[in-house]
Image (tube, rainbow, N blue to C red):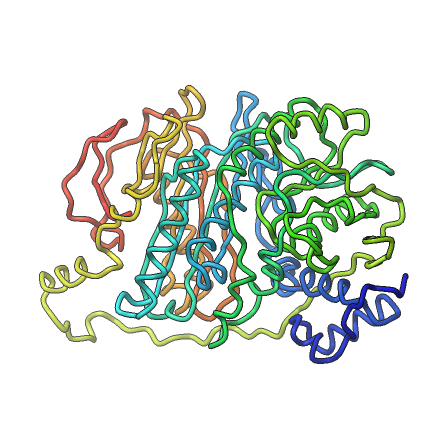
Length: 545
């Protein structure tokens, strides 16, 4: 490895700790590479070994989830899940959280959460047709809640509305347990042809690796590491780690990617999401059992004097990395230039199974792929006492309790939220926000998709196992209430002491006109006292968003 590394700082214990790496992990790094890492390498380890990118603590348990079925084309392990819905069509869907960035800078944190999830979907070759979200805030009286709510809601609407995809459903709650950090979960759903699904695994040696989309800046550096860290009183100082989104650039990127895919130019493609160029390049090589050589001198940048460390860890938005068919290079470049986007060959695949990064003639990085996997100590949750209703004196009458319930922020109407989202753009939204589940038409019909998000956090806190079951069951009921048959589920995983996963169902396509009239049960925390309202499909019991 070249030692003239452009005045990079010396690696100290303090520098290692500031990158979120524990002493034992740093010792593991030394054993793996047999030397002290460069500053850029340390940054890459920090990004790739955090929980957000590697699932080093949760992957062991997530492997136990059921992920296979005859209609599943792609389960976990790619940019998004894919299921076959017949007639040569597939639904591509993904959901993930953008909690920490949204707490630090609510508008941009939410916009880039939406933008990132949309890229995950169209990276697979799908055109996005719907977005959903599940957002949780602290107590309404908390001094930051109003600022966070207005910023997040505006960010979700600002990106989705500008990009041109309808936001058709979601969930919103308030609880003092979220005072210290909010939850912002974004979901996107798209349609693709079953024989035109694109994957991230690189194949072939000496194949060109191409940078696509917007230029690289200094925004979002160490965003993935920040997303895995705990917050403290100095969290506001992490504002520079939040990315800045541009929905109009993303719309151009969508159209250019779909066109380049239709032209049969793509071998593999990967969104530059968490950890940016680092994660996308490493994942493409690792999934294809290949090495990757990158030359950062060719990376399009919008700021001068960017170091290798900054370019590798930047999380600037609206960017892709692609392995291109060599004979299609000129055609692919012409397509991206037509859409006003950057196109640059920044490297090649190699048979070495090594990740090599060069900058200014120096070899800045030379690593393998050996992320850790931990089996953390865990014990069963303590059994909570069972309280029988007949043993507790009612603090108030049923009518007074009902009035108090419907006056809470948890159960009040969320119309003021979803009216800020465009939920009809595209003309295929059949069941709008406000019901058990959204329904969107598949192309010109007659099939439809039912989509929902749901969870009851207090159940998960009281008993994680039973709470997880209840979340699945609640989402299942939402789907069946509009006439759908549950077919696939995804979730957003965030390890925390105060919040569970949120369940998201997609149903098997059904006749879009078969959605049935329904009314929420009185015991359902989503109940409403509103009068039924005419929808494009049916009369439904209008209820909280």
